[in-house]
Image (cartoon, rainbow, N blue to C red; front, side):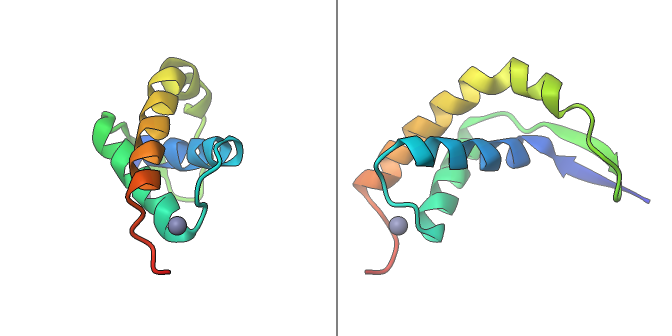
Length: 89
Ligand SMILES: [Zn+2]
């Protein structure tokens, strides 16, 4: 069994947690997902075919190639969300 997977999504999600740990902004689930969505809209998709249950071996490669672009997009998205948070009070 194989499936399509946007590995940019997983990578951005992981990186967002790192960025949120450093930045002094809201870390609730709504804000976190808003940041990930904004960042992903700014970045190219990276689809790969994976074997269900199998390990994804290319993530290292992706990390080196996109790390700066991804971090920039996340920080930009975090500042936008921080200015206009959409979470409930
Ligand atoms: Zn929030």
